[in-house]
Length: 225
Ligand code: TYD
Image (cartoon, rainbow, N blue to C red):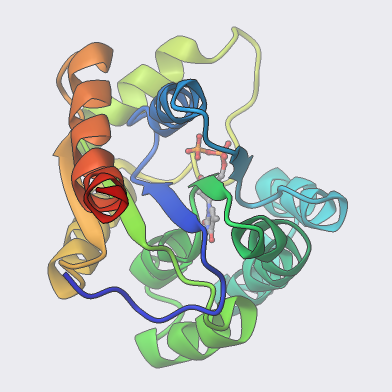
């Protein structure tokens, strides 16, 4: 299996998918497992992960950037990502650690692209500027019918808590989003793995662990022999 060459040597795994698919839970489960294996693991999220990026997160999720248009939002998500990569992700990878990130550039492709406002070429240029060569080795796409994900997200929300800018979008938008993630997986099968997220948390966690062992840890064990 070939992976994109990256200057850093660590392992970079991203979790992607629509609303309520269980990314955060699965990311935490994998982090716990890898730490139990004695590995250095940094967990982070997008938008956010650094003080500057968290400021942009608050602005973006409040919906205050929405009137500026999808391109402006894509630029702001990318600006947050550039800082995140430079100050958090790349340094951990450089010292050989693992980075598990809840959403990354595929979310911009899917959300800002699926919204129809921003074409794929522009998104690719923004991605290149923000990410450089620090691309994920593996992207786990958790897949769930949009209606089910939205219902799960609604169930975990505290009563009275407002929907964020993207949760307020129509069910049709969220279905388009699901398809956009599946299309990304199909176009980059070496990097992306789609997991059926309708199963129990334990079953999904087992599937995630199996993929990670297969891709990385089995190789390391063989190399050590
Ligand atoms: P968050 O509360 O982290 O949502 P979730 O639990 O679904 O991950 O909010 C992040 C929101 O921002 C989510 O609706 C997806 C959206 N988003 C984009 O539109 N573009 C992006 O590039 C990223 C990283 C997130």
